[in-house]
Image 1 (cartoon, rainbow, N blue to C red):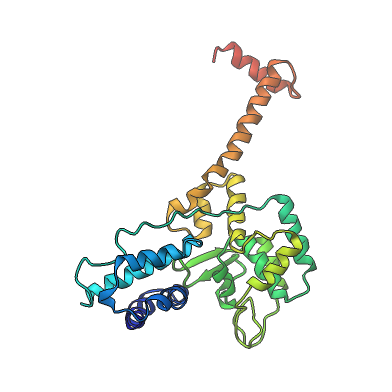
Image 2: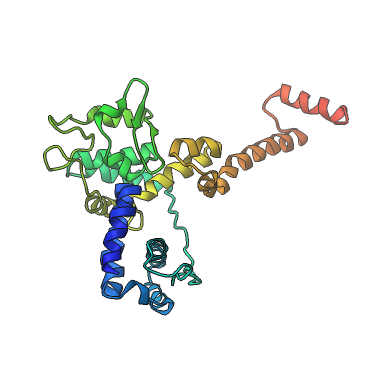
Length: 304
């Protein structure tokens, strides 16, 4: 199995997957799969062993299911490479654990506390800039940390990424994001917008400073990825259509954006309430505009 893992990484993962995905596959292999199955012969691994490994990870269902998916792909390739009989994948019929989507939205009061925490943060200005850019653009963490100055078109308010999770992508930079970029120094010899401590390198770990910032703001349960959810949820509740939100976020599938559909009804309800309130007020003679009252009266008289 250890040899199969090496071949899997070299011939499949590194050749056909993005670097970040490859790193995650390698992590799952090293931390969860090979310590248990590494010495086993590929042809001898049985479904019971896979089920036992999967069940041992049940406390982290998302990771358990990713381990199962990686193993399933490995055994499919093992069949193709002649290392197991066709149709013998031991991952078949093992039921995945249920995964609950975690979407943490931010209230206006929480955004205010976050703003105060960022203003008082005494660490690297690039850390503060990264957090602000995440929430002002709805971009993914990797997209912001890997952002290069050469990709920016500040006049058009765009960052043109040659590659991302969903392929080539344009990140839109609204005025608050442009204001953040205007305050950042360009480090000579460093092409990255969010510069790290090493020469010529980007900031590679935002998690540690983020934990300090969110603790100051009293937002201990908020992840960096939740800033992307906050952007999308505010966009939906402000009346933006889901296709537009999906375009901004770089979603390739409408179903990905559909999770915010329940928020999109809020402005519709507010509009309906406002219209009904005007009609109700006119019906009892409370109106601040005579023209509105006459219009309602004419509509009533017309039998509409």
